Length: 309
Image (cartoon, rainbow, N blue to C red; front, side, top):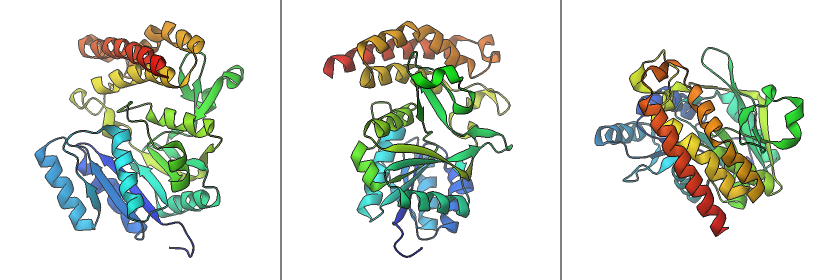
């Protein structure tokens, strides 16, 4: 640890993926031995829970073991609270399917120390070397999202940037300022919401291009039944992405913009389904049912949150 460097914790939320912890988190914990490792195991079954406990015990990690699946945001909030209790003052929030080397981690750590009111993410590559994330934009006119490098110049005035929750570096100061993740999302869009609230609070977000990381997207939300070569996503992925787009509108946007997002709800659900490719529509019941349920629940949540604001 560099003198006067903020104490660091690495926080990971696990759900049924202890093999990924062994593959990805173990090397990260070894190359940064002064960091506290906090693993929140959202309950997925007794065998997985036992595997996580054995792995954590063998490496000296701290575990939080809720009796249910608390979701991504809820799990991260638990993990950061525990890490802060243990004395950490900056937090690397890391997916089980993401990994970064010692140099990248130190670059992020130095950056958050220099500017604690900036939320940071690395430039993230897939395991085949292609870019998975180097910045993203949310179009406030209709709720669509796209990579910043693919955003047309005409959309810049109506868009806001956001950072993926796959790997984030955040200071304790900024975390307390915005209150962590909103647990109402449960899964997906909580990183969009966090980025939006950081910017709304007058703080900043930034992609640190000189700190590369690697992310195997299929590790946590692909449709396992479809096989490793399939692009198909899980019903959970479709449901929460469709639902939470509308929840975000209800929580953060005015009535006129909400109406525009609701008018685009069917098109948005179709676009989300197409992320899994067209082959899945040979057996369309599961993805279509998830999209319909997500749309209906999202519309209800948008209405309810608007009424309570």
